Length: 196
Image (cartoon, rainbow, N blue to C red; front, side, top):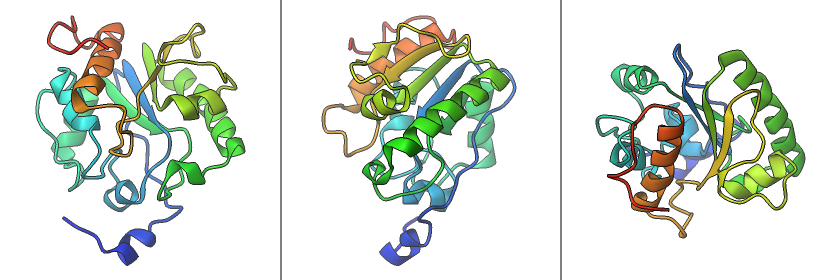
């Protein structure tokens, strides 16, 4: 599946529904949808995004997902059955997250509290420490478990899986995602994932 630049641009400012089901244990939080995500209505869907390969490598999902084509109904059911949910701090599609204002991110952090209170996951993992710092007014936050919980859930900042994040590889992302998977009691250990 491919899109022309014009087709993708038509999805600017579109929204993508949260992927949250019963039995939620681990809620991943993206910064905001990209245009490819909005076009396919699938979180982290850009072909260069490493989210699903890292989830698979970490043992959080049991099969590969073709992110560029968008979720099938079976893909959605599989992710939900594993106890995983996905939302965004800001539900407005842009080309780059840098197009978001600090105010949008802070409002998104407040909205996230409501989502977490309603669905009660064990762990919330915000994928992007820079956006996390703004959204939660924590300018010195580092990657990893945060000192305060969010509405009773462990709160983590994990690396952004975007292909634009040159500091991470699929392997290092799998290490981080494996750690939150253990914390959320989806996986038992991180022995098969690299250290972070």
